[in-house]
Image (cartoon, rainbow, N blue to C red; front, side, top):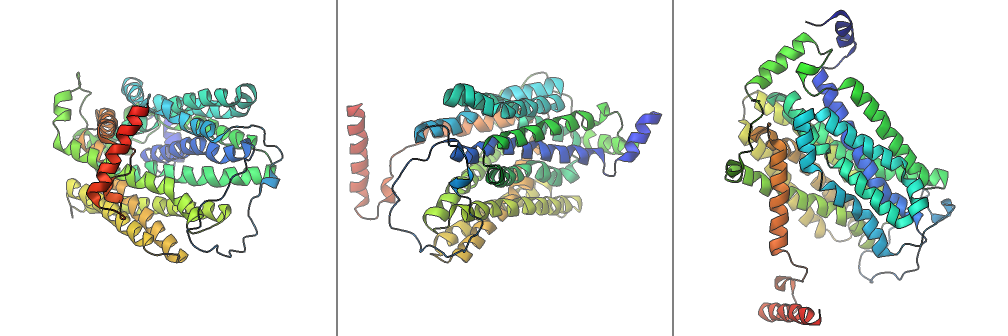
Length: 456
């Protein structure tokens, strides 16, 4: 039973504590992504602009958008660093060197000490490093920034393993689609906010440094609220209502067993549903990051939008994806709760929608020529349909095994990496050639590879 002060606190909350955790988890992901992507925008004003020639003559006519809000380099008072393109690329990628390292330790920490601390201190460390970015760049320039970004990646690597551990203890089966969509959808909001607000801050202040102070401070504020409001599980929560606690015990009691004493590696690698999840994860990441990487370049290089228009038009699909993920999550939970589909069939259905739908829209967009309105609608629809991944395969790891969910994540990382390392190629494939015989194209490719190896 709750004590007097605990009962008073429990009545102050309008929404249940499991949804408080979900909202704070959403804000955790959003904060993590804003701190991750803000450098992508800030670095354009941290370096001296180098003269360059324009690309080829292909593409569409330049549209007359009459944009009166374009950001020009005149708004930035100082371009301090002479970093070439390879150096900038190394700076931007250095975050991920740290990021991939702490997924497994993050899961182990979540298991040992609880997701609250693993996630909380991970985001806190990233916030502190973000605040230190201007000072680090001033002292250590490119090398210092690279080291700092690796450290930021180490902090953020615990985010998703810890959130999975939290969801396993707070998300009932009938609400898992909505809660998972809300929490993981924070990535889209973080991408949008990090990109848009970074440009806005630099435009109004004429300096890139406030960008890092803003997002670092927001990360610190989130940590304080997280520490006060959220707990590892309903049992340890000091002011959850007795009604909600009983509901979660009944809803999760039959689905979450005690922690296993040993990791069943053989069973994990022999699990067919796990391999199905790995394949779905590969498909999702390939489609998603194709859009993330190529959409801005397509809008600028082919559709000839200016940089300001490219910015907000590139952000539009992610906003739609976030809204759609919430909608799909609600529909999925409704279907499961009403027993219209089993959990398995619901996951398969929404993953199919998120796979086939975006693929069709992408292809149609590529055949729409210079009809910019149609292209934008199709790309936006593609990302919107991709939002069905969240109540589909994104939460499926929790269905398979919420006790060892981060081990499943590790398997996904290892397997997808091994497949890429074993069979990836940087050479143009023979089947891409339309100007010569396929067999001759393949032979030419092999000869080029052999010659390159001889020169090395």
